Amino acid sequence: MAYQALYRKWRPQTFTEVAGQDAVSGTLKNQIESGRVGHAYLFCGTRGCGKTSLAKIMARAVNCENAQKNGGNPCNACPSCLSILNGNSMNVFEIDAASNNGVDNIRDIRDQVEYPPTEGKYKVYIIDEVHMLSPGAFNALLKTLEEPPSYVIFILATTDPQKVPQTILSRCQRYDFRRMSKATIIDYINKIRSAEGFSAEDKAVAYVAEAADGSMRDGLSILDQCLAFAKGETLTYEKVLEVLGASDMSVFSDLYRALCRKDATTALSLLSGQIAAGKEPGLFINDFIWYLRNVLLCDATRGGAEILEVTEDTLSRLREDVTLLPRTELISMISSMAELSNRARFSTQKRVLLEVELIRLAADVAKPADIRPQITEAAGVSRNTQATDTVPWNEPAAVPVADTTMPAAPQAAPQAPDVSAAMPAADEGNSVQSPRREPHIVRRAPETPPAAEPAQDSVTAPSVPAAPAPAEAPKTHIGSKLEIIRENWDMLISELSPANKVLFQGTVLKEERGGILIVFKNKINFTLASKNQENGLVKLSNTALKKLGVNVAFMARVALRDEFNEEKPVITDEDIKKINFPVDIEG
Image (cartoon, rainbow, N blue to C red; front, side, top):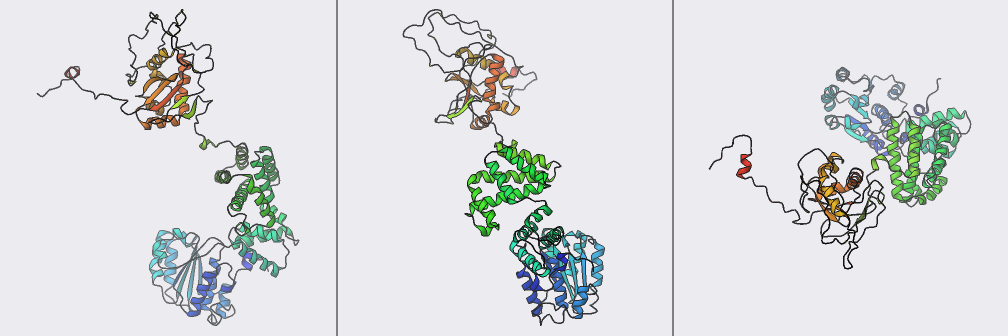
């Protein structure tokens, strides 16, 4: 006789033998025992949880001659049970909806239900993966499913009940099957181990049950593979890992500890060793995520072994690893590895992605999505703020400022020639809203310092400590800086991004604390501009130094109440006369 796979050989034959589905099997058994059998059932659940097995058991039980005497279980000995077990019965029809999903297939069923069973009590139609039926097939099934003949029972099975129309769901008794727990799978494998007589370590059986991921059929298939690899010898934990291409938990513990120490060399060495041993990178990523999950749960549950479902050796390691990293950083690491798992699923370079991620985690480098422009001392503007009645404004910090000591001016101080007489400078406090023109640069000649010594009673402005300006940057007094910045303001903000350029239009420039203060009319513009100062205040300072030779720090704040008292524009008769098309004035 040909070899039969374990999941087929050990398929349950009665309701009592079904593992992990006590509520469903108990309900169906009581219905058969009491004679209250429905006409349509819907079995929902993940793969390998017993849906088809229970459907076949029920098909035998409703036709069994001794079912009520056996407490609802089929006897599997009467002619009806034997014919169904052998696949010779004309009363049980098992249909795969994945390959028979058309309207014609359902019409054939609808024609067949008109004829009563030749033997037994019921004709049972088991439609597997019913969610694969086409919309037309579902519509063709509706009427028959709602009012079938008294001798017909429909059992529909699906792994995706969301795709089943509500019209079908409302006509069926729905039973939701649970995922198999790890303990249930271990108990069932131990039962098979005793009956088959093979030897296996408890740790190996536990890992097979964990790899099954809630599916009894998957667990038995994995066990079949491992037993074939063992060749009649004891099935060890190492052999299971070799068959599945997985890694020991100690590897993930060592990797986690290396990342906590920021030791990229050790982390990459561990990964290289596992890849060289034939471990699959995608599986390595998922297993590492699972280990990090165990570390997190060990921290959250105070090391409770009942939730983690791990061995004592692994639990002791987890309790040591819990203390290595704060919980927030651990959660961040899990999120990063989960994102990596999604990206690696569709990548042909899984190893490269994993190595890059390990280097990033070890070096604590921010991901590109997490990088935001930060205001630091080296960037030119500090985060120091001063409490005022309005929104705080930024103080200058590291942007070099030229010598701002103001000598006492004599009575007849020489005046520098005004090279921009054709364009009067805006008064202090007025909005800088110049007409659109090509950016140009206007440089004012610096004021000539007096040759005479300042008077004894002259007052000097406090100087701002600053680094020496570059050789090519001429020293410029504050009085002329403000005028140069105002006259070249359009050129300066044209160097910003389009979004930031709009924010800086309509602002007012003032002298403040040895620099130029930019006053925003509203809080929204100020907030948006402050969030990206690398492309705002800092860039303005660099542009002024590079293109104007003016070494100045920019600051910003929101306008105070009534600081912008702009009169509403009034159109006069003279303005109307300047319009180039005729205007009729009603009077």
